[in-house]
Image (cartoon, rainbow, N blue to C red; front, top):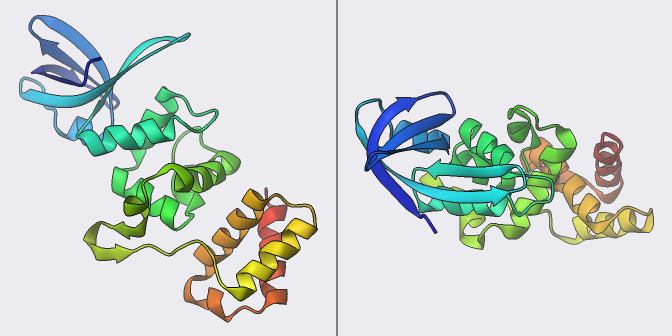
Length: 205
């Protein structure tokens, strides 16, 4: 398996790099971080991932192993292929993705072309389940991520939502969205107000 490539950069576009490695030209779809390492005529080493599927073979390039690992976690999500995952990494940096997942920031993912609200919500929720805990507990720059809603009021509301027929995943996502929208004011909500706010979020889906 190819893990990295080092060579001369022949050309750079908004999404890809052609890298000359020993006389062979590799067309590599790159993350934003990977593109930042490349300039025409210069040398570059990219961490890479080769994906072979029914759609063909694609070579994806990254700035480092952390970006590559994040990409591999993203493509675990049903319906998210390699090209879509790379589009996400071309619009959002790895740090921005982790921050968006930690704060259930759906709008951040909706900045990516082709990502609608439902897909953005799935990315926020499902990535939180597959990202390493150390990534989503403390973000770069010392920023402590907000945890998923917890506590007596949140637990009671989550139970109420499930009794109304909503799935556990939808209940947690709705509460996370309310927390992200209200910030510190989230803790001031009583059960009735939190339930109304969560139902409002669920009705938007």
